Image (cartoon, rainbow, N blue to C red; front, side, top):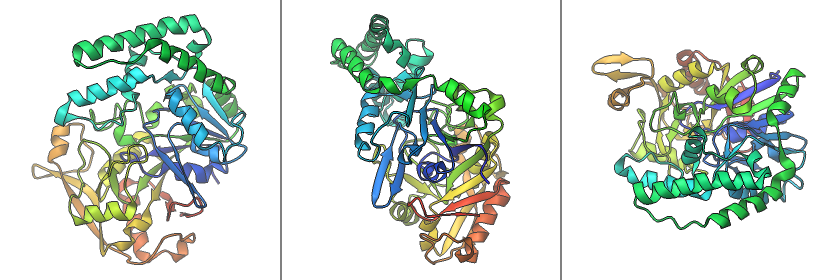
Length: 429
């Protein structure tokens, strides 16, 4: 039986398949909540022969009678939100009563996206690999106290003053620090934003009150994390991280819900049966050979948001153990098991070797991490088709050796396995 409130988190570097899992589980929940990040997330949900790529809207939107919340910890581009709503409007006839947007959400503006591009370009070979969606600069504005919240738009004069400060401060930075061109028009941005407000006005509310009341009254709430634990701004592979707390650490401040209420939740971490990463940064188990290419091709590893080919490697249980500890995971959900059907041998990293010593805990220092070599345990491949299997008794015995290794090394039970992209292709273990 599922908990009244359940948190679904990415346990690797993102792209673990959280969207499909949230869509599957949403059937048992009334509320589905996104609480951090922005359109840099890409959650793909497949329903029948249709594929939906969601970047801002919670994955529960594709099921009727679910309340989907975009809460205060997110940063939202109204341009992209409205485009996303338009893409699914044939599937979601009316967003009223199904989509709720926090009045405390911070907004991403065109000048944030422009600044994002100049910052990334200036880093040269040390670039982070940002999606260029303006997420980092929007969080910079938020913490620099020049940000603009959705609530500010209800007072057009106040909004205009706030936008002037943010807009022209960014103009100065781009022109004087990065020697770039700033061609945006202030009035166009201002009036376009007010026009966009009217398209979502009836969806804006205080989601903190909604969630507190829901949790206090024992309603069923599903929290949908974006990106992954290893990209967390505090606990990830800094500075090659995202701009928010993409682990469980971002849950309370991202929703406006007390830790006492959140503490009653179950926490499940989603992880691929192997490892992928988009963008720059350390990746101890990365494979740049034919095996890595095979993982990419069989898993169709290309970014939902960027389309970039993902870096691939064997499953890293050192990183997964770290993610389980940080998030206090009650269970693991393993996705893309079927991708491993093609391999004679499957490797999992159980430790790192650094300067002749074994390391079992994930290091903070990137200098150390970049010099770590994976220590592998080799498991015999099952070399049979697991795609679409829905009965655990039909899984090859080698799959259970693989899953048992994960449980033993991470000290966290595997509770579900996904055997394909469709919402029906999964097994409770």
